[in-house]
Image (cartoon, rainbow, N blue to C red):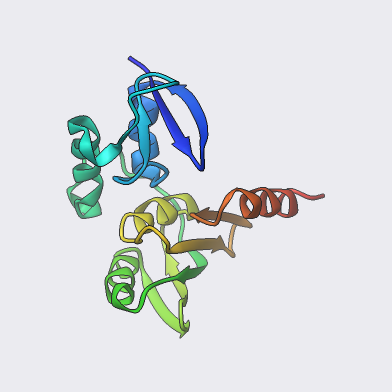
Length: 165
């Protein structure tokens, strides 16, 4: 079985179920994402498909309850910037606290010191974001960044800037 994903009218794929499960884990496929088993027809929201709901339920569990391998990593300093709706700030902050000590710097800006990675933070925090909210995580200790829901143009510009010599 293969899956396709439609984003802004463009079709991506085919992807294996394992790849799609990983996309759900990364927050790249959410309940509102359009998916199909064929490239040209049968598009449905991922939240309407049992398998996707199982994967999303797994991702909604607290990190300690998940059946994922634990990544051993050294403590690092992170800057977390999120554009959030006012009613989602508390939930987002609580999830962020699960990963270490935090300091709120301003509206939508936190410093975090914890033993994790930018990619893990992005993946975990993306599950508490609403559809229009976005996220940027900068690992100041390791010169890494991860982001979610910034759009294709921003994605390309960030990659280009971050990888310049």
